[in-house]
Amino acid sequence: MLEAAPLLHRALRKAGRKQFSDMGFLRPLERLLQSYREEAELSAFGRWAVHFDISRSLNNQLRMDAAEEVNPGICNRVIRKPLFITGLPRSGSTFLHALLAEDPENKVPRCWQVIYPHSNIRDGRIAHMRKLQVSLQLQLFQLLSPGLKKMHPFASDMPQECTDITAQVFQSLRFEVIHHLPSYRAWLASKGHAEAFRFHRRFLQHLQGPSSSSYWILKSPDHVFSLDAICATYSDARFVFMHRDPVSVVSSCTKLIEALRRPFSRNVDGRAIGQYICDRLLSASEHMLRASATLNSDRILHLHYDQVASEPMAAVQAIYCHHGRELTASAENRMRRWLSQQEVKKRKQHQVGEYGIYADRIYSDFVHYIDCFGVALSNNEPGKLIFTKAPN
Image 1 (cartoon, rainbow, N blue to C red):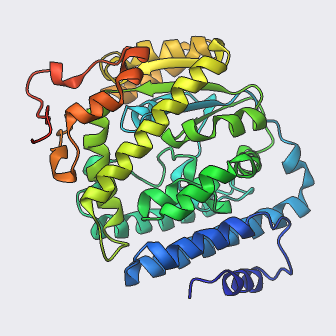
Image 2: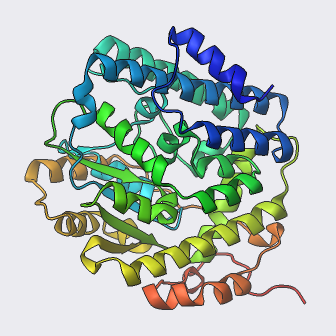
Image 3: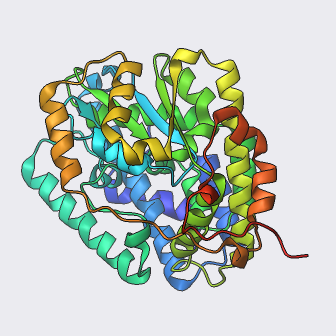
């Protein structure tokens, strides 16, 4: 049964603790579970996966509570001038995040650290076992969703998105991407993300260790929906907005989300996914337009997919300049070496018509976004298939 009380009781009993230090997560958890029960149409594996995911998050919170009792100084660690990469999804942010992670002065949350965060992470044996555990979990997911890795790379040691951090207090858009949860989505939009990012800061303090000399490089397209909460939590935060032709984004996102949802749900509706993606991306573009008009211009750097793909080191230099830092020769060499090892892949542009959406409608909806940010349209490139008009 997906009910909060037994999940909490089991986590406390397993940890040998009497209570959580902060119960602010309870209402979000209850709201999420209600949406799972009423809307998600979970498969048998989906129910098991949700139970596992929630239990893991509760266990992580209790381990963090225990670590802070032993070392209260964890909560005083300084997170200085974090950089948040956001914007439209499928716009090169994963590639850019991994490239920036090659600089030893940059810290990124790794996949295995996000799934199992603990403060004594410097113990090499513990780190090795956690990486192995996460690698096995990812291999299982790949078996359940064949072809997913071709659309989105993942590995236990790769940089990970922040949605998996805020998911641990059950206030994350990650849930609605993987499952059909419209009421939870609406509830989260009305509630806001302030509490989630207070936990986000606490989470980074656990990963950071005692040194404060590094800079956190953080990434998620969903950050466009929580800019106010980020700015309230991190007053010195800087942002990189990634832009791309919305037709290319919709084409890529629909296939990816269909692949993500299929192992967990009894019913995957392609047309519902198409409408969800269009609504979500249009809202994201409106948030970027509003932020660009209200935030100080020196806090946001705008980059385009084609720029990052064709001249990645020029994009890196622009980011370091925006961040008020100098790219060292050794860091640049590490990045160039990493780039030389990457396999260049051309992503197939999927036919969005099968999802009930067409390019002319997308361009009409996104005209303000395209004009404001000078977004290049992919239909001007040869050899790319798109639907230019909806059927009569």
